[in-house]
Image (tube, rainbow, N blue to C red; front, top):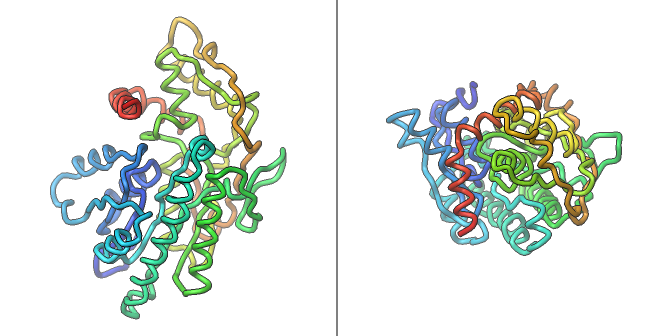
Length: 357
């Protein structure tokens, strides 16, 4: 990857939410594929985990200590956010920090308002203050990249796909909070001239994902010979994107994306929840067979409130403008993911223990 190689100085990049699933993938790629100075800002919430970054730093050996800095900061604190941005003195900001689990947003929306809306507002204010005092030369390359979700667009029927011109129609407290943050970012561009970009992605999966999400939950429950819960009739459809592909796309956008633009990022891999469960079970039957087929563990439970039927992403813009294409189809990505969970049982057992405590 040739990101930022045109710069004579090592670019300084602030990544919020870098202890999260997608943020961690971005930081690992920045560490291995660039010479950027990286500031990882994270409040270390219940799903935060630095293990993958620690492993990457260890594998890279000495000499990385001057390139990676961790800042434990909650973006809902305005003063702490201002201080963190001043300390990082970034050339680029990638904003991934967010509460992201729809079920949790239904049970307790307040934390999503605080983190996703107030936190984004505070970061935008800090970024604006920082940008205003930059030299003219640094202003020409500064970018604020806001990472969002396709859930802000609502739900689809059997046909059609979301794209950059889709109307906003959020249906859950989570998606409403992300839609609000998208609008805030766009308004800071148009009102204050802050150089912003927005990306909206489809569902991510891959190694290091917190076990409450659908794919790791299916894998882990199957390996424990526990019931695999599927909402409703299992016919809800999502487009699935391997997390390493997403990280590649995000770095393409921060380097080559145009200010004021939006880019939709998807894997072009639509699957129903039933298909997901069956593919994983079939794969597990092959890799580590049990006494009974894993499909027998699939159990249908009461549907989620306001459960959107279908999401799908049209990726023509990022394909053509930035020459980005996903490398992994779902069967390749899910096999890599399953093999990773099989090789890292200690990690998810420790995460579950922490969750119980």
